[in-house]
Image 1 (cartoon, rainbow, N blue to C red):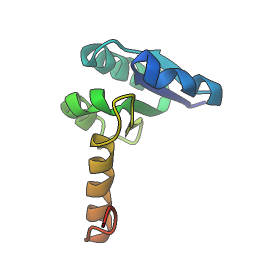
Image 2: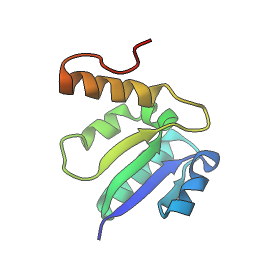
Image 3: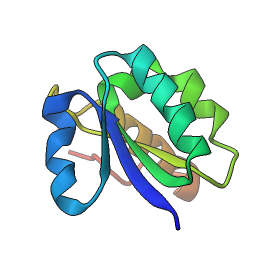
Image 4: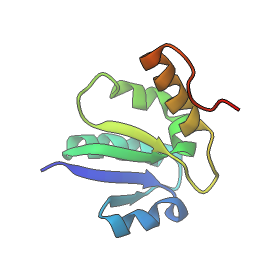
Amino acid sequence: MYKIGIIGDRESVLGFMAVGFAVFEADNAEIAGELIDKLAKDNFAIIFIAQSYAAILTEKIAEYADKPLPAIVPVPDKNGGGYGEAILKNAVERAVGADILFKE
């Protein structure tokens, strides 16, 4: 059976335990990168990662982009939004050929 996990600092990920995610605390991006590799080998289908770490680990995340599993998804963390929004905006632009989100 596949699992869902989240990687990030304690404040950003602790609440995800309530919805059944496997929670992995990382004090820095280097540890988060090591956890990505570990979870990928341990049958995790979806790995959410705090966007402050995802922004630093773009190369690591790209290693898994063409593989069917795991899907690695940046999520907002205690520092707020930004990187996750940019990823979503780029994905939508590629899919539909225009920026249909985030228009003021």
